[in-house]
Amino acid sequence: MLIVMQSSATSGEIDQVVAAIREHGLTPHVLPGATRTAIGLTGNTAAVDAGHFEVLPGVAEAIRVTKPYKLASREMHRDDTIIPMPMATIGPKTFTVVAGPCSVESEKLIFDTAEFLLSKGVRMLRAGAFKPRTSPYSFQGMGLEGLQILKRVREKTGIGIVTELMDTEYAEAVEEATDIIQIGTRNMQNFSLLKRVGKCRKPVLLKRGMSATLEEWLMAAEYVMAGGNYQVILCERGVRTFNDHSRNTLDLSVIPPAKTLCHLPIVVDPSHGTGKRAYVPAMALASLAAGADGLMIEVHPDPDHAASDGQQTLNFDQTAKLLDQMKALAPVLGRQM
Image (cartoon, rainbow, N blue to C red; front, side, top):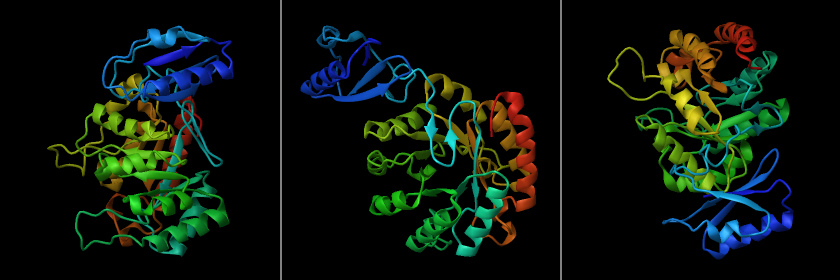
């Protein structure tokens, strides 16, 4: 249920509604808007009598929300969510690029990549300190040492950091070292992990599971938002299909329906979506045209010798060319990079 307050409602009247929701054993979510405040209500397992709240001072109306992903739904939050950060803003009319190596391999690599990205106007760096790998014998990342490298690079360059959290054990360490916490595709339905990042106060980039439906993806976002963290960014990174011409099938067709049903920003990862660097530029440009709010790509100074996923990673020259193409296309589509 969504309780819409009158535009003239006072803070005291809003507090009274919040208290009434809690008295019914439910959880209130205050959602300030441009002209009025709405209060989302979750935790009910059966229908709630709207009459309990419509009689309270300052209440304009109580609206039933039909979607199971209530907080992520446009029924509860009509306007697009904007996620502002010191180094970038992710949301409508912007196109934010996040780039960097698949994993933290050395301090020099991360510094060199950060300096290159900043020189090209990219202010968000992605790199995995912890790496979920299909094989237990593959490079698993540098762990806590990798997090320290990311922290030092952020302190010295000012670039924003995106890295993956794989386990609740390292939630505090990852939150401290990064500006956006990534939840990888294999953990999209790790509900304990989703509940934990729901308590964090950093934005969460939630990758779509490799065989997840749109509703399952949005329900995973709902877990994070139900914990009180409304700063969720969806990331389409390809789904598993029968095709054998690319690593995954990058599902750009999910962007329009996701935008219709949900108010959260969406970025696209064509590196994992295709698995082949030759295909990344075309799908990156297609992501911008399809309405995505940003891009996550893998970039490395020497991809052929990368510790992980080198085959889908662009070198600096390829990245510079792609950025120039996107900067030319973005204004035509009403986006600002």
